[in-house]
Amino acid sequence: MTTDSTAVRSSNPLTVLLTSKGFVLVLRLFLGALFVFSAADKVADPERFAIAVRAYKLLPVSLTNLFALVLAWSEILAGIMLILGIYTRKAAAAVFLLLVMFTPAIATTIVRGLAIDCGCFSNEGGSQTGILLILRNLFLIAACLIVMRFENGFFSLSRLLSRKPRSA
Image (cartoon, rainbow, N blue to C red; front, side):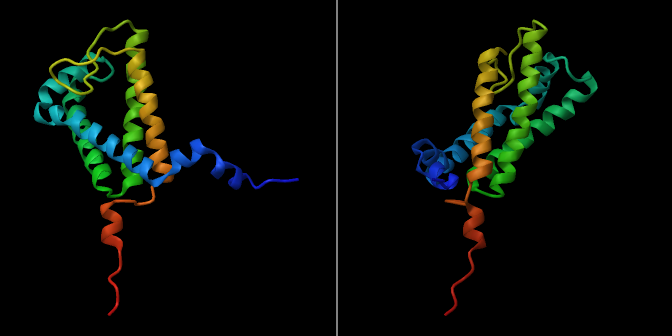
């Protein structure tokens, strides 16, 4: 007796939840709001954010100002796109790439014994780099992967704008 693997997968309650349009929408909005919120302080005070970037000691000092500006605006743009549902899979992929970049950067601070503020949410001092930030990022990476894979345009501006007018 053979079973259809898609039928088996779709009957798994966890799979049904993780792929449901409501759950994917919640993840999309959560990721978008998180990245807009985290970028707001960075965009408002790029000089202070550049100082947080320098603390990682991964880039030449001459590049940290430009990197901080590009990073902050990338975060806010990707977050807004996720919230509005514009090029949602691409925005989720951008957030995924940012997280894939952040996670090893945080790991290097642990390995090198640096006790620094991660620069994640606030320029006023936030979380210290550590294993919990890596675990948080892994959760966010998984959320991005779910959005990238199962986003179907539910409650999105892209879907609303792509609808063809009804003929009279």
